[in-house]
Image (cartoon, rainbow, N blue to C red; front, side, top):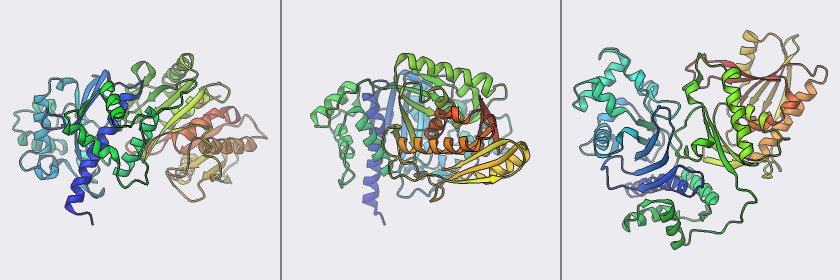
Length: 507
C-alpha cells in the first residue's frame, strides 16, 4: 500500500513530468511552444504548468490559443471516478476552501490573456459512468461543449441542474456570466500514468538530443531537476534558457546529423488532449476539424468530394517542401489509409509515422527492423454469399468480425467472401512492435487480398479495420494490390449511427 509520504512524492513527480513533457517541445525546430513554466507565481490557481504558444495554436474553438494553464491532480489509483457535483467541493482537489470552479474563476480574473487562454484540469481519474458531465466533454480537444450545456432549457432540466449548481456556487447572477467562466475550460480525464510519462519524456528527449534516463535507474532525474528549477527561480523556460540549463547539467548530447531532417507535418480531423498538439507549424498542418462534429463528418460534408482533395493537395505540397517527412495523424482511420495511397511505396519519400498509444507517441519507420521475429495475422476465409465483392475485417485494437458480419448482412449483399485477420494472442494494443512490423502486416493483408482476387481483379474490396493508423497507412501504400476498394469508419464512441459508414472509394 502506498503511504501518504510516497503518494505526495509521486504527485510532485507527476506534475514535474507533465512539465517536462511540454518543456521538451521548446527544443523542437517546428514547435509552436515558446515558454513553459513549472509552478508559476501567477495565477495562484491553475498554476502547476503554464504553456505559451507563438504562433497561437488551433483547437476546436474558432479562436486560437496563446496559453494553457494546467491544474494537475494525480492519484495513487486510476480507478477513481468524479462527476459535475465534485467541481464545487474543495475536498475534490484536496483543498480547504476553494473548489475547482472557484479556482478556475480566480485564474481567469488574474491573467491578462484570459480571452485567448485555455484552462486545463488534468487527472488520472475518469468521469463517472452515467454522469451528465461525460456528455459535455469534447471528443476533439476535451473542452466543455458549451452549446450543449447552455441548451436553452430550464434549471429543472438535466443540463439546467448543472448550470444552476455551478452558477449558484460561483455566486453568479446569470447563465451568461457562467458561460464566460467556462469558456476555455477543458477536462483531460484518464491521463497517462507516471511510467507512461517517463517513457514519453525519454522519447522526446532522444528526438531533441537530450539525455534519456535508463529504466534500470531507481530514480528519474528529470523529476528532481524540475524542483531545482523552481528553487533557483529558473522555472520559466524558453528554448535558449532550456538549452543552457541542459548544457550546465550535462544533459545535452551530441547526435549524429541526419542526412535530411524530417519535416513534421500533421493532419487533424480531431484534436486530442495530448500536450504535443503543437509539434507542427500552422502552414504544415491540415486542420479539418471544421468538417467534423466531434468525430462525425458533418451532414453538409462528403468524404470523397470535400475531404479527399484537401488531403491529397496537402500531402503533395508537403512532398515539394521535403523528401523526408514525419507524419502526425490525429485523424480518422480512413485518412491514414488515404495518406498511404498518396505517399505510396513508389513516391520516393522517406517517412516517419508518429504512432500514439497508451505509452505516448512513438516514431515508426518501415525500416526499423521490428518485423524480425514478430507475429503475423491469423487469417480465415469465410464464404458468406454469392456476390463478387470481398470483405476484409482486421482486428487489433478491437474485435471486428461480429459487427462486420451484421453490417454486411444489412447493407452490402454483394459481398461473397469475408477475410478476417486476427492477432494470434487475441486483441491487444501492444501487438504491433513498430513500423517495420506494421508494414509487414500490411503486406500480409495485401498479398492475401491479391490472392483472393486472382479470378476477378476488379472485385470491390470493403475494408473494416480496428488497427493503429500506421498499419492502415502502410496498407494504403499497397493500394494498387487492393483497389478498387472502399474504406469504412466505425462509430466506436457509439454516439452516432453505432455502426459503419463508408468513406473513401479508391480506384
